[in-house]
Image (cartoon, rainbow, N blue to C red; front, side, top):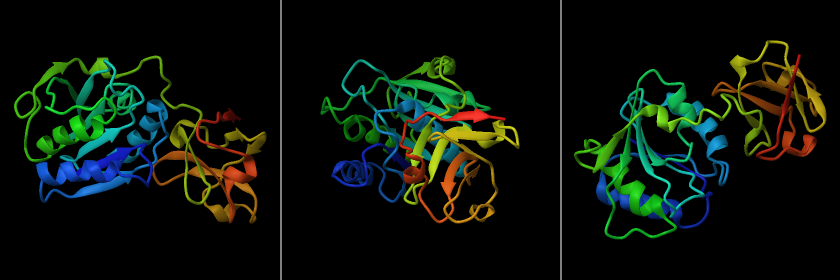
Length: 246
């Protein structure tokens, strides 16, 4: 399968244009819409979400990932093979955390260029054709001109393992953080929106209208309000910092 992960948003023509390229280059390969509203222009926060969600997918999946504020510049294009899954996208830190946490990694710089390469849409013109070739059995360096890289070069060692920021706000107003819940003490509180938020296991652990944080289904610390919206109640938005207190 090919898995789409972008900051393009749910509206507009961009995802559809990439899918059209995939349909031509990899007919019959399922295309999964994982996330179209990753944190815009923010490879670090987007990478937190990608690292949390990708392990749910089978080995052999090809992730087409576009969070690319440097599109059209000299930033390299990248293929990373991480624990049997392949990731295609810009080399801007988007894959740093998933590479850092992996058991087995290989990486390549994409040297291939299409005849038509716009300055503003490498997702359609460069990354989608490469993803299609990989999903149909191609290999980096064979089906796609690519140069092997030291996987360590993909990491961003100055970036934290668990950025203490809001990485996503879902349709219910829950604020997903970049922090893995398993890294926090069991009795830790989160400081968000000027409030101290205690840990719970389910929404019903607090009365309606009260806030809590819990380990979400992808292993990240998430702030919610029982039968309410944490983003409004606590004034939270993507990118906001959170504190961690005993």
